Amino acid sequence: MNTDSRFSNEDLAAIPLEKRTWKTWNFAALWISMSLCIPTYMLASSLIEGGMNWWESILTIFLGNSIVLIPMLLNGHAGAKYGIPFPVFARASFGILGANLPAILRAIVACGWFGIQTWIGGYAIFQIAKIWWPGFAELSVVFPTSWGLETGPAITFFLFWLLNMYVVHLGVESIRKLLVFKAIFLPVAALSLLCWAIWASNGLGPILDQPSKFTSNEQFWSYFFPALTGMVGFWATLSLNIPDFTRYAKSQRDQVVGQVLGLPPAMTLFAFVGVAVTSATAIVFGQTIWDPVVLAGKFSSPILVTFAMLAVAISTLATNIAANIVSPANDFSNLSPSRIDFKMGGYITGVIGILIFPWKLIADPQGYIFKWLLAYSSLLGPIGGIMIADYFFIRHKELKVEDLYRSTGIYWFRSGFNPWAILSFVLGVALNVPGFLVEIGCLEKTDSNSFVVGLYHYAWFIGFFVSALSYLFFMRSKMKVQ
Image 1: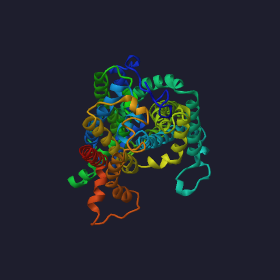
Image 2 (image 1 turned 90 degrees about the horizontal axis):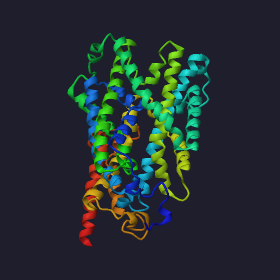
Image 3 (image 1 turned 90 degrees about the vertical axis):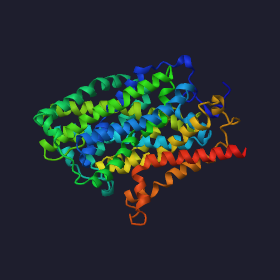
Image 4 (image 1 turned 60 degrees about the vertical axis):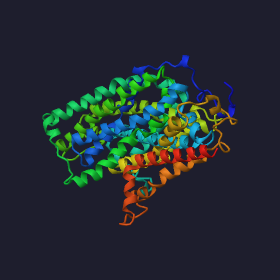
């Protein structure tokens, strides 16, 4: 294939059909593995903490994952058909150079998830340290108060971060055994937690009888829609870069059936564990404990806590490298294929993951849903809308693969950028900005701006459809002029 070396390297090049080996089970297993992680548990339990009862939480999660499955399958089509990764696919709509915008935004979100997973793993180690050395939890605070960071957890967070960077240095192959351990252990750990919840609560009855905290339909709906958007936002990242995986599919059927069988069922079943256990904590401890690491720290046996927290740390390490390093490494590589390889992309991810202050993102369920999941869904929704509109309605699923890798092809647009894609992206994001500013306290909600502020609760949906429709209008108007 005739390509420009400035825009391609081994990681970004299209994979020929004869080298694609993933079948239906591989995609189902991918989603089962990705879904069985601590943030999924926290996603479900945060809804209980927010006021929902068990079936409201499960229904919200199932609906959210069923909705995000649609763009997942649509974006995955190009990867399976042409063997190209997400940053290269984005070049068809945003331009060869313009594709850096969606790639970097996707990468920054992955950095945030990397930081969150690293914090969870580090906090698990902190739980081990403090149960054997109680004074470790009483170390003097050395960080500014505004950081909200205690010294003990900061030390273990940094140590776990170093371990992640060491694995990046060794390369992706070194994580294989850890992924096998995770695939075996986490289902067992989830089942053990569920059994504990049933035993401690004297059966499922008391758990399922936990009522909703909402006293009116208005309260429920005002929480439900942003929560649903947050559920969609949880996998909004993968709905964009799913071509990074479907490029290995032997057929379209394999990627479609595998994802349908893997994503909604796995997320819903593991979410039920989070819902049941969180509901049980309200019965056993008199308060809802939505963080499983904090919950495990309440058990009295040092051996049990040590075993559980080591397992959490190792499982988190495996998830982190597989889910939050591989994709941003490709995205950062797209910036300068000849200079940034996997390791360098991984180091960049690690540094940004610290600077995002992940301990603040998951400090409370409101922040987890409203400030983190909703905020980044407002950025990624517009990108997904533009890419799907371009591929299915403008290109009709036909791409000139060689032109995706050179400056003389049809995807160069204007100096490497498609201005209509960028304008459509800005329009999709702009409608969600007022609501975000209110959420973080930079703008006051008033009667005059209440409507536009309320749009933020539908951030992913608003951004997706506004950007998709704008892009179709601009591109078709341009074609008529030509």
